Every structure is written in C-alpha cells, then in structure tokens.
Image (cartoon, rainbow, N blue to C red; front, side, top):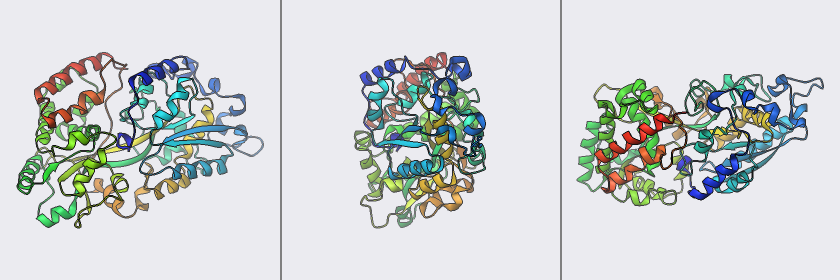
Length: 479
C-alpha cells in the first residue's frame, strides 16, 4: 500500500513528459489564491450540463424536486490505486453512487495506476477523481501538488453527503482536514480529501515475545537491550519493507523527541533546525537502529521484493518493522511460525516517562485542476464519506476517517485502532511542499539513505550534512 503498495517506478522521462503535457492545462490556485482569480473555478471548467446551483451541488433540491437533476447525463471518470484492499470495493461504491445520484462512473483501478493514467494525462485528458496517496516512489501526487495542479475542495466540506442530511465536515473525524497532507500550502485551504486511515507503528510477532518472555520496549534504551538479547539467539531487532516506510516512523520520532513545536519547525525546514540537539537525537536513533537491522533488508527494500522483508517478521528473523494496519491483509496468505500473532506498538519514548507517538497515516483522493466534470467530481468525493460507502469500504478493512467508525470494527483492527486509548499520542502531518528542485525530494533526502546506513555505504555524519544542504534548498523554495 501507499508506497506500501505494489507499484513500478515511473521513469524520469515519463514524469518529465507528463509535467510538460500538464503545463498547458488550467492550473489550480497558485500559493492558495482563490480559484476564481486563476480562471479555474468549477463553473469555468465544468460543461454546461454539469453546471449546478450551489444548493444543488451541496445536496439541495432544484425546482424539479430532484437534487441531482443538474447532473443528468453526466459521466465521470474515477481512477483509484488497487491495494491490498482490492478493487471490488471501488466498483461497489461507484455503483452505489450512481444509484443515489444518477451520475455514471467510468472506473479505472490498477496496482500500477501511475503507468495506466500517465499516458492519457500527457495528452491533456485527466480523470475527474484520482485516489492516489502521497509518498509513493513515482511521486505523481507530489508533482501535482508542487505544480499547483490540484483543484481546491474546501467547499466540499460544506456539501451535504448524498442521500444523507449531514455535511461532509460533520462526518470527517476532527483533525483530518487540518494537516499538511490535505492542506499542502499552509493556507487553511483543502486540496486533498482524507481517505483510508491507519495507525502506524512497529508491528511484531506477539507470540515470539510471549514465548521468550520478552517485554515490548517502552523506551529506546529498552529497545537496544532487547536487540542485544535477540542477537544472542540469531534474531535481528529490526527490518523494514522499503525505506519509504520511514516517513511515518520519522514523523512519529520527531514528535516523541521534540513535540509538535520541533515537528512543525523541522517539516518547514527552519534554518538551523537539523543542527539542534533534538535533530541529533533523531539521527542517532535511526543510525543505531540501522546497526540492529537484518542485513538482507536493503537488497529487498523495493516495490517488487518488500514482502520478503515483511516475511522476516513472520519467520522470526526480525522482531519489529514499521508498517500500517493494512499489513494483516497484505500478508494474509503468507506462511508464518506456529506461534505467530500480530502485535503493534507505538514508537518507544526517548526516556522513561516521555511521550510515545503513533503516526496516523491516511491516503488521499483529489481532483485534477484539468478535470472536465469538476462539480460532479466534488459530488463523488462527498459521497465517499456516506454511511453506505464507509460500510462498503470497511468490508475490505479500508477504514474511512469518519467519527465513531472504530466502534464497527472487528478482529485485529480493534487492537490497532484502539492504540490511542492507551496513552499513546497521535502524530499527523508531513514535510511542507516546495517548488521542484532537480535531484532533491523528501524521500531521497530523508528516507532512502537508511538503506545506505544499514549497508554501511553512508555514515550518519554524511547523512546529516546532506539533509542540512537539501533542507536549505527546500526552505528557499517553499510554496
């Protein structure tokens, strides 16, 4: 899934041509300007048969008594990444949306979605709605954010959910539309809709720890002590699917080391932030963890072989790995030790009595600014938070960030989604968007070097120097 999903890396040339093709299309608001200022309002970009008065777009009835009469004859295209949740749920939601509103949906799902929709977007034809999270190797969503090519959807929050009386803002759980993952320009305006969420942390075989009489570490000192015990039995302390999984790990670590204030400064690339004691603690922990990592990890840390690293945990060849709740479905058919049962813990506190954090990762859905049917696309996005859609998604263990939805969960998900009820604090947000810098990406600067730390091809000091240099460039190019 996410980068955590099976995907193939789009070539640099493909991305370059994609962006070149996108350049002629209407752009989303620049630096948070109103869409109307840039000539990209819904009215400007929506065909006449899809134009709808404000009350209709938000679920109100028109003169005919049909709240969706203005969308008659409209067909929207929806492109969604196929993940461990499968693709059937998307077809069921699309069918339910059509039954409710009369708007037809042409659905595209694929594990390599970037490769499927890329060629048509090069030609200027965009899906009306795209479900594709940030953090993937291809970086398509990030490119659209950087180039201001995503439609603002703040108004969707005030729309009435089709078939219901509640507004979208009433359905979405608190905090999910107040993060840089949905408001990437820091202007209070929403451009990406929060989708399936997952508490992220360290997943492990609880059966192994019970068998050995080992406690789950509550501090990093306890973690190192456990690593030494495990090493005596030829078990490594740690592995990871790909270096990209260190995003949620690194975010939670920054919170636990320096709290929200340090996190906010670090993710905005404040001058000197990576030379502070808090930053050094983060670097030290990751570098030390690299020395406790199963050495086969880097060779398998790619989108083709990442499940082999996850298998190390199921085979008791590594204890902990960073992951999200989707791991259960992703590895459902994989062989495992007889004593295996899933466990999950937040990142250990830096010191005894300190705060422990679990990052809340969620996917995003968005509307390209070049989409043809923008009003109908917004209607579809609003429907994703309906009780009916949430019920369909939940059958595939895809949990929408909707209030009280955890009460409807079963099995391992009860444990996973109750992690914040045991004193663990949630971490949310990510690195701020910046204008494109050749050769400089968040993943390549902050995450990918972990592979080199494990293999010994890079020192901690070299990593810190590269982070400081890249961060200076990122700060100068903040959107």
